[in-house]
Image (tube, rainbow over all chains, first blue to last red; front, side, top):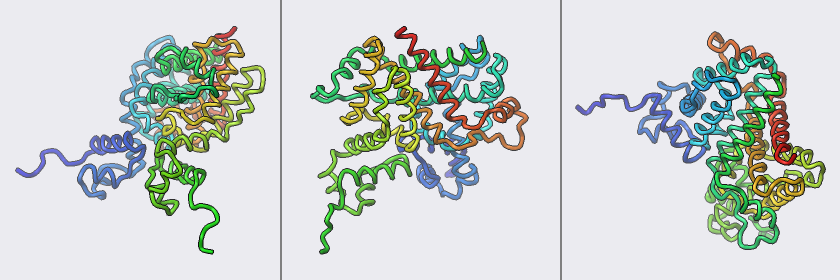
Length: 201
Length: 201
């Protein structure tokens, strides 16, 4: 009686609180997490390896939504495309985590394992060892930019009442089909895969 | 005497203060800007159209560094590539502004003018009106993801002492040439331009 059956904090709750802060403000601090969970700041440090440790927990949490089974698909370009789509969706759910996670090195073992599988897929497909990271990073840059775009407002351009200065932009916006984010992503994804193919053909 | 010759605040100073906050924290508030400039919050509203207005000032400031003269180059794909490189550099200088700017619609006249010129370049090159925004957005997604990557730490992957779980990733990282961000961007940029070319050929 009076004593909680589960501890007030654990790594999962700390991660959830940090992600809520990042989703709302684009940033978190250990003090803010402690306040949100109603515990002393010091007690957080019994559970996580400081701020950097929390960033890695965030990375693992966001990446959990990426379907890594895609790596077992074939051929390699279909597997890479499926991975890219799943990866974009996972990060589009937390766009404000993107710059935070890109600003510190990947250390989380479960996320490194994703990269291990991506590297394996490309090596098995015949990519040169020196090309592999370049291909993965090129694809990730497209994915993360596209994830931000997927989370962007619709419409993304507001021309105001006077469109005399932007007549052709007005026409292009009016002519653009619905679902611009998906159409743009698929166009660039297809182009990148074609470009990657040229490295192994 | 005692009365400053220049006003304490103007739009340029407000923009500079907002950008410093965004660079440091990924976010800004009108109250924080006022505090930074040593003025009352209310007096800021005489100069800017609220928070949204400041976001557009930030957009103009960051985009000022993009060399729009590129649009006059030819052929169109060389012009687009030069624009993309200049655009990436401008945003890589302020990576934390990226999600902020992507989260609200473009209204700044000088930035809309950039888009007008990009649309004109593509229409003049023979792109179908319905394809133009898709091409621009696809390229922007790559540019902004690559700008975040350019600002990311080197190395971006830290495998720790025990690399038994990531043997192929360790090999790929060791084999990757220096300048991974540039190499990845150029690979994807080249591939995208090739993909866009297929839309007009």
